[in-house]
Length: 286
Ligand code: ARG
Image 1 (cartoon, rainbow, N blue to C red):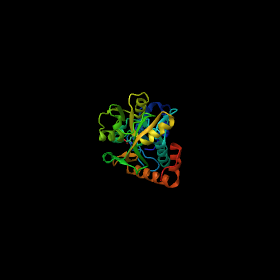
Image 2 (image 1 turned 60 degrees about the horizontal axis):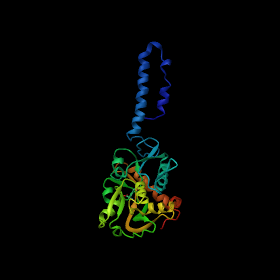
Image 3 (image 1 turned 90 degrees about the horizontal axis):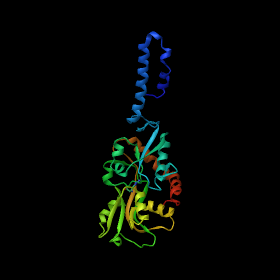
Image 4 (image 1 turned 60 degrees about the vertical axis):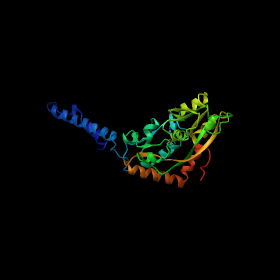
């Protein structure tokens, strides 16, 4: 149903219908209502299409699910959601001829595929690591970023391993690969506390509720830079992770194809490097 049809029908106002044809006027109104209902119904049920023939949950928009904050991949700055992932997905939106709109939602619903399955968004961009169990419930793009885990500590406290925190408190983030890593190590004598998001985990370390925090290295590097002299990396754990954008499992192969094309093109034409330098201040290691 073309949206252009609606204003045309709206031109038939009851006043232009002869007084004795009230029934016809009512019918015309009913048709206008039906047409309007049809238009909004198609956009919310995921059947609207963009110019590129790719299905989108809301007409004219590429809707992205993310979990804030996760700078420099996604964070809210001056009321705007910005970051490396946001810039990458903007390239996809541009290719589709639509604009990106971002939904902030807990990481659990993102990594379980639930948000994609329920049509909350078209794509998940959340610094999300590609893992076999996640790939069973989500279609992942080609990898777009390499990461590892790391232990963040307060500067000068000297903790250089998880074991060194015996008798102390360690924090990690719900649902993440950092949490998985800590769980797999079960460091003896360490009290582990889980935090719902990165901001509360950072806050806990800053206020000495915990003595160490495990999360992805690139977010710690960014945090250290933004808080000079306060924090440092105690240890790096070489988990060899790769991030991928998520798409509804077997739900949108056209979008998956477009995303992969955009990542590959950005890497070969220098756009990827430009975006990388904008958010990390250095060129990517090749
Ligand atoms: N890379 C980690 C994972 O996939 C952490 C991602 C957390 N992302 C976020 N936006 N909160 O588990």
